[in-house]
Image (tube, rainbow, N blue to C red; front, top):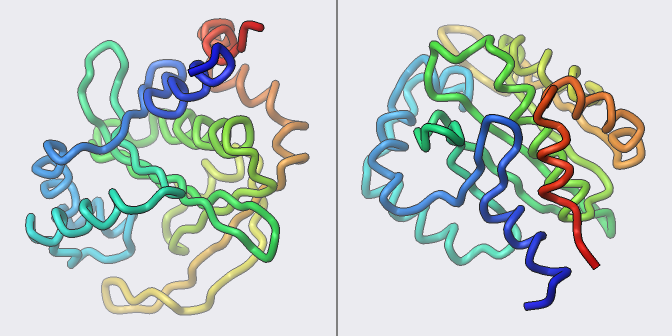
Amino acid sequence: MTAQSKPITTVLLMFKFGDILFRPTEKQDLKLVHKWENNAELMMYSRSKPLNFVSMAQLERQFEERLKEEKNLYFMIEFFDKKEPIGSARLEQRDWGNIKTGHIGTYIAKKELWGKGLGRQITVALLEMTFMQLNAERCDAGSVEYNQRAHKTLIFSGFQQSGIYRKVHFVNGRKWDHFYFDLLREEYLDLRKELLERVLGDKLDEYLETIQIQV
């Protein structure tokens, strides 16, 4: 392993960003994920499916299938100082024609942490991975019409609403639209300094030092 490649590998596998840490989802995490993904309120916002009943056997099969994937990254999110999982995230790599695209998604599993700004920090961290480590040209994300917290987080992070899939979700007795957002590489780079300052504050220098490559 060369001096140049080591920092990048460390960043992708154990990505510390401010107060939070992204690490790969492991099989021993499935018991906790099973609890999260059978929580009706959490799934109403993260999956648009309150009745998202998932058995442990199903989660184990999904986990084994994901191990075969090379492009997609699945994370557990923890507070760095507590090593306590608080949610999950994914970064899928897609190609639209010959344009490399990152598709991101996340949820914070603990309701007491909703509305605290963690979603912004997580989203910007995923954008750092998408554009600064995986060299994608664009990033996209989406959420159900009623998930206003998610929409505000994406707009804060530089995304623009670029489309609507009409009436594709049926939740609590009515149909809802799906809002689609995207962000281009050049748009993110224009906003990057301001976003990092806003979400990292006094931890910005620590992060920039972490990703600096010594040659």
